[in-house]
Image (cartoon, rainbow, N blue to C red; front, side, top):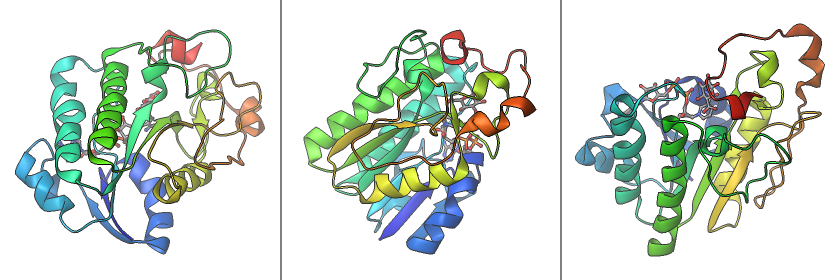
Length: 229
Ligand SMILES: NC(=O)c1ccc[n+]([C@@H]2O[C@H](COP(=O)([O-])OP(=O)(O)OC[C@H]3O[C@@H](n4cnc5c(N)ncnc54)[C@H](O)[C@@H]3O)[C@@H](O)[C@H]2O)c1
Ligand SMILES: O=C(O)[C@H]1O[C@@H](O)[C@H](O)[C@@H](O)[C@@H]1O
C-alpha cells in the first residue's frame, strides 16, 4: 500500500512513521514539499497513493480562528477534494468532544467541542463523513488524546495515547474493513472516562497508571476544562 503521511515533521507523525515505514510504501510530506492549503499542491502530493494519513494541521487548543482556518479547514477540505477513492485517515481530537465532563465518553457521542480548535476537528469529522458518503471511499477519524512518549501532566493521564497504541491505531485505520468510523485515540488508561470501544479492531495495550506517581498537575496544560477535568 502506498501511504501519504502529511504533517510528517510533526510530533505525532514522528511517533508513528517508523511503524508505517516498516509496513507500507510511505511518502512523508510537510510544508517544504508543499502547502496543503493550496489545492494544486494537495493534488500533486496525493497523486498515486492508496491512502492518506492526514496529520498536518495546527494542534493548539488555544488557537483562534485566524490561525486555524488555513491548516485545519482549508488544508483538510483540499485533502478530501483530491483524495478520490484513496482511504483517508485523519487526526481529530478529544477536543471535538471536550464539553463532556461526566460519564463515559465514547466515539458514538456527537461532537461537542470545547474550543475553536475542537470545532475544526468536529468539522473534519462531518466533512470526512460526507466525503465517504459521496465518493464511496473510506474515511476514518481518530479522536486523538495526548500523544506523547509518557503522560505530560496529571490532567493527561486519562487522555494519554502511548506511541505503541498510536501505531496500532493508525495501522488498524489503514487496514480495517470500514467505510466510515470515528475512533477513540486513547490508551487503556485506568480510571479514564474515555471509552476505547471502537469498530476497527483497535485494542490498546498501554495504561497511564504506571506513570501516576511520576506526573504532577501542570497548570494551564489544557485550555479546555472539559477535556482536562
Ligand atoms: N499532539 C497531540 O497530542 C495531538 C492530539 C490530538 C490531535 N492532534 C492532531 O494531530 C495532528 C498532528 O499534531 P502534531 O502534534 O504532530 O502537530 P505538529 O505541529 O507537531 O505537526 C503538524 C505538522 O503539520 C504541518 N503543517 C501545518 N500546516 C500545514 C499545511 N498547510 N500544509 C502542510 N503541512 C502543514 C506543520 O509543518 C507540522 O510539521 C494535528 O492535526 C493535531 O491537531 C495532535
Ligand atoms: O488533544 C489535542 O488535540 C491537543 O491536546 C493538547 O493538550 C496538546 O498539547 C496538543 O498538542 C493537542 O493537539
